[in-house]
Length: 276
Image 1 (cartoon, rainbow, N blue to C red):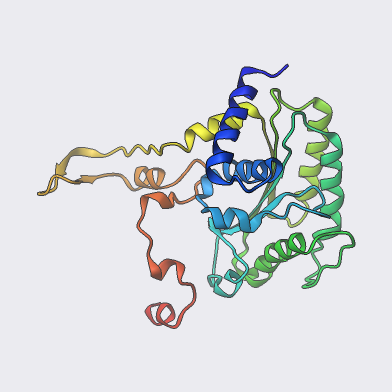
Image 2: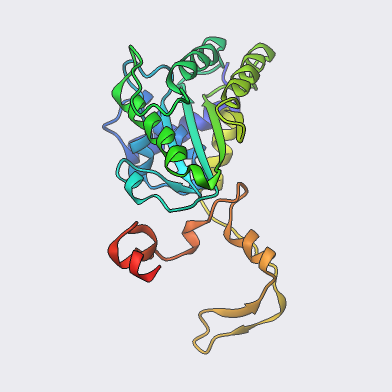
């Protein structure tokens, strides 16, 4: 019997499926929906979310894989625009099932494929049988960055997110195998931190509600001054409070607070190099 949270999530999925992507199958839309909620803190657009989805034949139970350098998503052509220095690289992997219940076999397959795919021997080409080209290409994106920015001594963070419509948390046996997977991922480099997160029906509903509005609180000093047009305020705030205001819980820059700046996203162009 479905829980209330599961029934409400099903209604949300039906509504959004009809409005956003009626041409997609239910399974494909759930993968996109789960990825959107899993990546909520990185503020990706629909094209960037879709770019990381590798679901299909020979996907090795990996439905999506995204690489970030200092909170910025690395696309296929972004490798040529990497900064000269960076602080951290993050890899987010999503496994989404349009069903209820967490499976031990999923965790086991993830552990096996990571042993094959992520070989730290400076290899540019990876040949893994029965693995789709999209997954291998996204894996190469990730492996390319630490090599190119080796002198930055990047902190590596890998996050695996397992999402489905379960009403409950995973069984202890699933969590035990998940801990083993996390330990395997932590061995990639001495600076690697790995996490495994489980999203169920309750979590997906909460993230959907959280995405409906954005609220940020800025702690300021003294009374703010209104501008002449009455459309804004000038205030004095501590630098640490301002930092908390412009970043999310995982310390990613809240891009929705800022206007797009061509000098920021154009990459390593001649003009940017001259300015630098």
